[in-house]
Amino acid sequence: MMIFKKAIPRRTFLRGVGASLALPMLDAMLPAMASSAAKIPMRVGYTYSPNGMVKERWCPKTTGSDYELTDMLKHWTAYRDQLLVLSNLDNGNEKNVSGHIGGSAMYLTGARPTRSLSDIYCGISVDQVFANNFGKETPISSLQVCLENAAELAGQSSGGYSSAYTNTISWSSPTTPLPMEHRPREIFERLFGDSGTDPEARKSRIRIDQSVLDFVRDDVARTKKAIGAEDTVKLDEYLSAIREVELNLVKAEEKTNMALPEVDKPFGIPAHEEHLRLMYELLVLAFQTDMTRVFTFMVAREYSELVFTQLGHTDPYHPMTHHRGDPGKRQRAGEIDVYHAKMYSEFLDKMAATKEIDGSSLLDNSMLLYGAGMGDGNDHDQHQVPALLVGGAQGKLKGGRHIQYERGTLMDHLHISMLNKGGIETESFGKSTGELNLSSTA
Image (tube, rainbow, N blue to C red; front, side):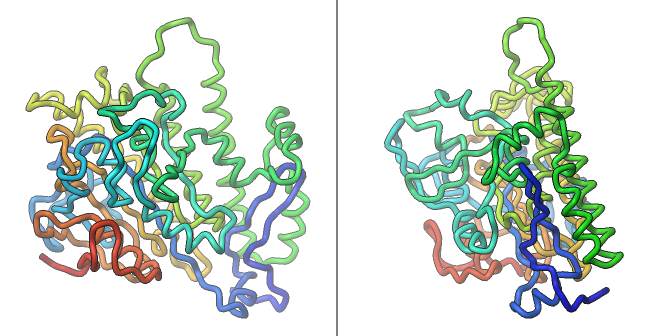
């Protein structure tokens, strides 16, 4: 490791007209970090799967450290030591509000949503508690992303509740649901486009099909002169990752812009898998560059009517989860759960492969919650919801176990535990006081 007398500031950007790239952590930043008592940051991410999950596909039959990996979790075998399977947690209760509305609205808030189409009221979500603290040190306090266009679904309210409750899981206040961005290009430009100086230059760059890297080439060259060989390799790897995402964006957009015959709009999204993979790649880059330390991601909204044609399905997602014991529908619903876990494993792979300056990985320094706001979609309630906690949390989490709690234990306890492990001292959240025991072997 090379230490330079003149350190590069941690918050350094490669700049060009219409582009601005934050640098990942480099060894050359160490003196500056030491002088300011800075350290490698903690990251937090929440990935949400709608419509519940088929329990046997995610929940092991035995507890403790010797549990057998289920169909879903087999895709995460490499991260077993950093995985906590938490079962018997409830997302609120039926006395509050059950089903899809409560599933998404209460998942990160623990608050009962008001039944109204216009006068919405819920609660601040735990991700925004993190964002209000972690976001003081990052350009973007948090990212909220999804795969479905809420504008097309705005009229899909249910049971007298606004669709705002099912289109997001993130709330900055009880009356402010945060919109989820479904367009990869918009997220990319938010991370790497310099919209604050000359948006027309950015549009021109996209229009003439130039890479964002072309506009910062001179700054890259200057930076390489100031860093050592190891940092140069890290920088080249980072720039290659950005270019790969750019190329994937272009491919996806070309397919979207293809002339198609006039047909009824299908339920499914043809580029669904590319879309999902792009979102995960963008989230890794956002963490790597420290543009943000918090994200929420809905892989689909509650009531989602997506058709997973890549799995050979012809039925929409939501009705399939109400299988009423039909073995074929239950099997296909479970296949979606396993598919989502497989795609998430690619995200974990990238998180584990992205190294910090001390040799640890992004995954080592993250707490990632993967789960759903309902239990089994067929039961249509918020009991025994899937809760899978992944990551090292900078040594504050010990994985490799399935912990089964007493029936009726609220998810809110988990939110308190995660806040405390993230350095945000918290005694109560939602309807709970006290932490969830994440060290139990029960």
